[in-house]
Image (cartoon, rainbow, N blue to C red; front, top):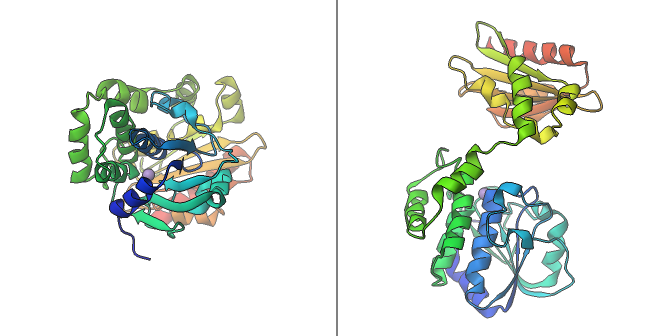
Length: 321
Ligand SMILES: [Mn+2]
């Protein structure tokens, strides 16, 4: 099915509805939360009764968005309309899939090219760098003026999904919309600080441990870092606090591949692999039963920490030929 934006068709459904459920995806990010809340605030100015749903807890960094505390994942109500937002596949609704059966009409607004178009009306554009941009267009189609709260939600959506306006997908539309958000008294510096600079204490303590373990291999083209389970205990850190630490290893000039090995509580070793284009690590990860993207992959190895690092490092060195 062709992926196309349908703001007018969805505006028609919205105008006919009185009660509307909006649903974001599991493990919510800035785009799904910001998009749902911007749309919610906009629809409420039209007098709609709007409920917002998400299976998982909203990240604390998004707590500044108006309505962020209203997400839930249960309801026995019926809704005139359900709109899924940034949900690439019905399974990404998680436990909120029950909404599909409790809505008279279903629609979605999304930007994932793999979307199977699982609702009655599908407004999907894979060229949009963030669903937030499609929400701005949807609000425009309904004649809704953007206020400061909506601008904050749209900024959170667009800025996070474009990597703070740095990913390759970032386009002129993102800056055009951003220009309009700036006219709404957007607190840019404060939001940027919370979204992109603030770091949790366990993360920073874990980072110090990881960096002190940094080793260079193969003429300084490969880096490895290790974190033991004891490091996590000492830093009072959760597995998620290790996310992105591997990037310190690959962002050094001259480095082509990086590995971060972290020990799980059960003794297995979770490997995060990164590569700089044109090198790739997805094949290496698959060789160990994992997978992922060409330049960002992962796998789990059931060996003691040192042996696990040796095994994956050998595969990385061999992949250079
Ligand atoms: Mn998105």
